[in-house]
Amino acid sequence: MWEDECLSCRGTGKEIEYRWKEITKTACTLDILTRCLHGGIEINKLTSSKKNQLLSLSTIYREGPHGGSLDGEISPCFASWIETLGNEYRFEQTINNMKYAENKMFGLDKEGFRMHEFDAFVRGKNRLCIGVPGDRTSIHPSGWYYEKDRGYEFSCHNVDNPAQQLELIIGLASICDKYREENKS
Image 1 (tube, helix red, strand yellow):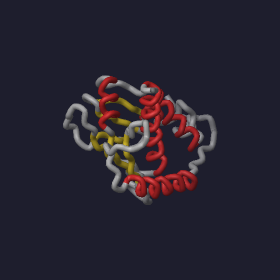
Image 2 (image 1 turned 90 degrees about the vertical axis):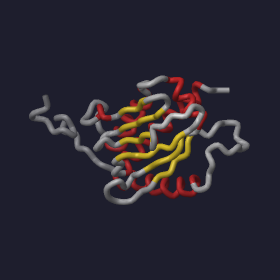
Image 3 (image 1 turned 60 degrees about the vertical axis):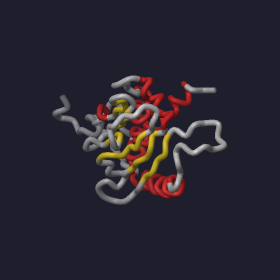
Image 4 (image 1 turned 45 degrees about the vertical axis):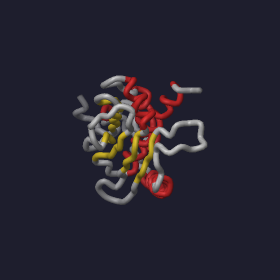
């Protein structure tokens, strides 16, 4: 198919520029912010906000393998909504949003190399799974035990750089946007 073409530019000759400096700054800022916000927060605690907290998120940044790790917790109300979508539901807009972010960060063509690796779907009753290009780079439930009207923790697999981390966060944010859009008061 692309025998004589460069896999990154698909024969267009377009130079690919990886903007790691800007991406790393963003990941470091998120690391500090989520450490401050995540510590000691109970996701089910009542607050004065009229909106439900959908998830908590904690990130870390360091150079090297697994340097963009993240984890968090899906709230009970968010897990219940995810359950209504059904097993194997795909978040098409979320997938497009993550591809758009990849394109903005690296200037890659929307149909470029590895774009098929983006995915966001429901597995089982209410388990959210999001994947981005990498070595099975994803976020997934920390456990698969299902209990109705309960939230659950999620963790990541092989998130090796800040770009992957940001794409996964964009995926989570996009799904939260979908929830908010469908649950306007």
